[in-house]
Amino acid sequence: MALLEVRGLCAGYGAVPALDDVSFHVERGEIVALLGGNGAGKTTVARSVSGLHRASSGTVLFDGRDITRCGPQRIVQSGLSHVSDGRRVFPSLTVEENLDLGAYLDGRRKNVVAERREGVYRTFPRLAERRTQHAGSLSGGEQQMLVIGRGLMSEPSLLVLDEPSAGLAPTSIAALGESIAAIRAGGTAVVLIEQHLQVALQLADRLVVLQEGHVILGGRTAEVAADPRIGQMYFGDR
Ligand code: ATP
Image (cartoon, protein in one colour):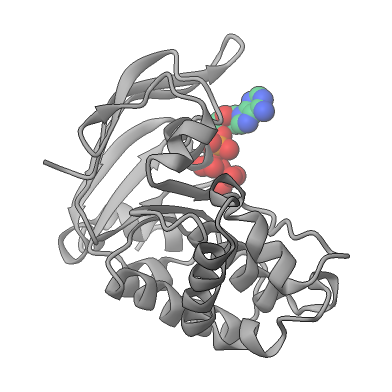
């Protein structure tokens, strides 16, 4: 049984359709990258899966359970954590305080929160160095580590990352890629929305390619990457 199974998902904004019959799956512990141009529907897929956007039809199964109509809080509690784009930290709170907010659903037990925080620091040693600093003083790359770290504080079995590398310098993107690989090595599956094709090709086990709300390609990374439509999408005609 797949960890995440999306079947025939349709969603839109008012009368404007954004997704039409989107299906894909994610196995335990694997990285699946969602690719596609601007407006292809990647963010809408991520938000629909996480309960932040209501699908008009279709089914989302997580760990064998139908979560299509569940709210975001229930979905986080069932082990699916969503890190939205835009890198929203609480700038006047410290790194540590920002992280702890990611565990608020388990906030009753301080020792559990502290243990999870140490786990995040092992994945992102830079955050440990900056633990007492205000989040607003961090670099863009560090803020991205912080929002991902906050997403890990609920100990998800699936992490959905919406464009984590957007706007980062190449060295920060490389560091981020290593961290995402480390997260997967720790057993957490990842759905990665990624504009940088090279990053997706390096990290993902499988690719799902969206165009105008449809899945046009899907499969093992090497197979999909060899499809000429990928080249056209990212590099123009070749
Ligand atoms: P990008 O890379 O630009 O974020 P995307 O692949 O994530 O694109 P979505 O943001 O999911 O695509 O958008 C899919 C479609 O839904 C687009 O046609 C977009 O214009 C439309 N859309 C997205 N958000 C809204 C909204 N809040 N209201 C109306 N239409 C929206």
